[in-house]
Length: 405
Image (cartoon, rainbow, N blue to C red):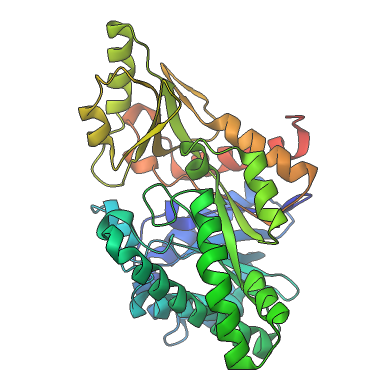
């Protein structure tokens, strides 16, 4: 739905269903109720997540025109998509498989092209569309010696997407951008790594590629890359890495890199007391969020302010007695509207800071709530999905419109 600060939606990766038939059934079940509560009498935007399987099926037979008719009937529109998870995302072990296939593979390229084709058909005239995607690969799949080749291969595949996006714009007049989403332990795990890749790989390789392919000047080539390859600013991921949001937004803007989407999401955090009993209470609280479906990377701060990165919650729990560690931040998307979880807290204040920066000087037109963990939360925290989505969207809307923070 359109707000004074951009189009606000939630990501449909909250809904199970890997086939198009199953996922469409979930949209039909939930979207009309959510729209009626949040956007009666006004168009409602959808953040669409399609698995690889669903992306293939949606382009078959009459499925896409049927979906377009349904959107029109319910006064809905699609302006952003989540192209990060390729395969199963619910009721299965996801963990590091969320990165597979990565950007070193042709499968990732072809999947993304299908999403672009679909979004170009769905996004309304005069509106840009964005597709968030993985941070190239998963860090622990590669040795240090492999990394230059991995970066180069992945970047060249992304430049194939740039070529395709330029063609789509020329043919349809619609601007679609690919939004790279840094995530802890992704090959681009934090803001600095994203900037380094963008300036050291994407722009040098990309400007040369576009100059040779299209016979354009260097400035025009760089402008095309910056138009079509943007940043997905996932607040949860940046908060886990203890990012200074104001400085990160400033750096991105100063380099002329665009932000395609803010994903509004919260992580878990807590100080780790030195006193044994209090420390055990905090560790035990974190352990309740140690579940087997998703990766729950932990970034710990030490007394010297240096960071330790644990690939998943079990590794952090195994180092629980390390008294040099004074704080944990864990990649577990928790409800936005709750800040205190007994002895744990959420990174809700990071959301407030990022949206305050956005309200002061907008840096994207796409805002997407992304809490996908309702099924794996501790049981007493679970609520009906429709009610949960509405409550999160209302919380963000109020924060955008009324908060002074």
